[in-house]
Image (cartoon, rainbow, N blue to C red; front, top):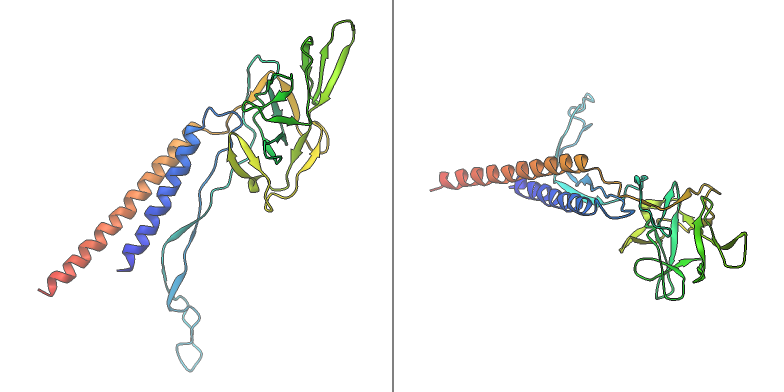
Length: 262
């Protein structure tokens, strides 16, 4: 019976939906996390009676046909790249992006990754790195005797150095933006890589060329809304149950048919 397969595709789709929702909920406290959404499309139709078919020699046509769908398929789990809320952390090297852009990170294999997670630290050489020790692009080194390190909204890093009454600029944080942010591929560790779908990165400094600005001592929170995720989870669960009911009903109908032949 066709309904068995059709309902099975619905159950598989809702299973994927629940997996996406569970990942969103699990990352509610992940810095810079961007929630995902499962998207679906209907499968091919069997046209038992095609609409517009001529029904008589006088030119009469069917105003409505008979189309039997074959279920649903998963097509994408895009990331929703909306701005997350900012929370004060009190750390000098924590930086949040307010607006467009990604921090650029140099990976051990030489590739460039991108992140919204601005929870930076200093390594043994005083270089600005991510929590996993990957260097920020372009490289910025903080002298060991530097005091009062500041990162302004334009991404300029400056500090007070001994023997100087004026602050010294130590480097410039750059950002990258993409035509299609949802086209980036997740690599874990709050990192993304560019893809042909995302387009090439457009590099620039904060507050220029459509880039957002920076806020020192803050971190961007995940853009996951707990109430919305829980309501989506309930809806997915109910849809899964209804598809299971269809399978049960189809099984009972097949059983009734087989009993007629005894």
